[in-house]
Image (cartoon, rainbow, N blue to C red; front, side, top):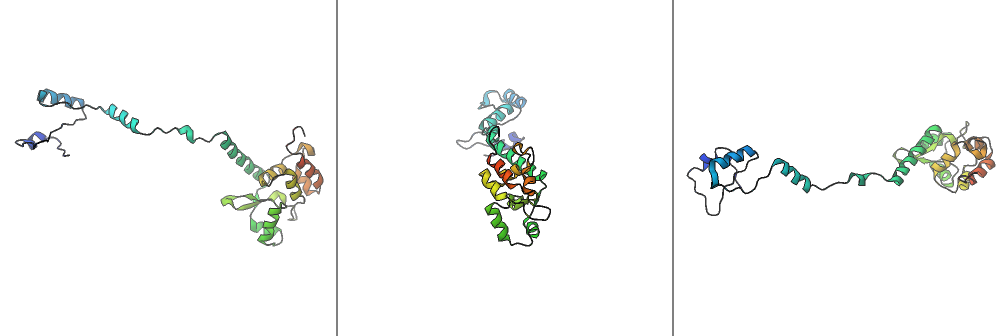
Length: 206
């Protein structure tokens, strides 16, 4: 395909088209098309006329339709996000968390393996922190740096290994404990009361 812009008549003057060749005049302006028709009359045959609006319509028709609603999280997905938000709020209100090295310092320099063992057995709470590294809620430590007693028994009574669930139970006032926080009772040594409340945790009307 060859294109000649303006001055085409002079450029083609005296030129004889080879067999099978035709000349097409293309214009994006309706007034130009009308002028060509008036000038050349029936010597040119109109093949097609496509306006700018029609071109846009054709382009839109060709483009795939994207249903944005298909990318919106459903109720279950939003509930997961809300659960994470609540868990992080629990941690913030409970005083934040220590990293591994800070916990080792509090526990008088115990090894990483010893810390990991306590997490696995449930006597130390660790939650996933930034970059998915373990973080250890400060609320589970007493003033002398020791870990409150009864954490494993509470986790077993709750029938869960989810640290966020355990933390949520420990730091919120509980009606079964006269609106006292379970973690405070653990710090004072009332492990049996907290374990009993944990066993009934979630019961309707308890």
